[in-house]
Image (cartoon, rainbow, N blue to C red; front, side, top):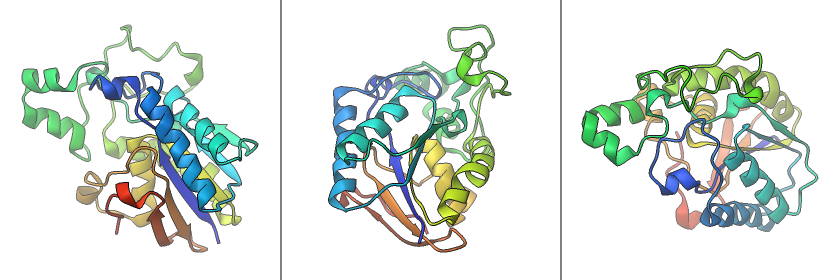
Length: 235
């Protein structure tokens, strides 16, 4: 039966600096690299053979995938990168310190921007430091200028249906190494999590979530490979 492994990237440099990162292409910290390698070691220890891997076009997720596959002894696995697996776009909050932003706009407002299902932050102004429209990774794409979790799911879902689900339907074991919100979108899709509940779902960094699926790609069992850092499972 098909198996899906969801792996959230390790700690990034802007995670450490408490900044809204979104689509900004920052690298892993040494701790983040260690988390990614640990994820791969857990996969190897569990004896899981991966058939295919998917990730975003952002360095922290790509390197998490590479480090995990290397540690798992499966660096040869075919891999696909796509911007539709990117982290949520944080719009005008991009690059800002989270604590400073809460002091300026109020903790309640920042909580709404960060944690509500369908309220996006203010849009990102064009032409600024974090304008991604000239980045060749996104050539030909219609890019958002801000996203809620709802609109993040709206870009992830077609990619899931067209590119990832067919490999699972063929019985493959698929690794998706991505970001907190793009993985949260996948969790919402496969478990059909309610809108008001999905915002509370957390996936720990570097801890593979292994999901066994039935023929309709609905979860039949799920477990975190590092039980000491496991969050509550959806559903």
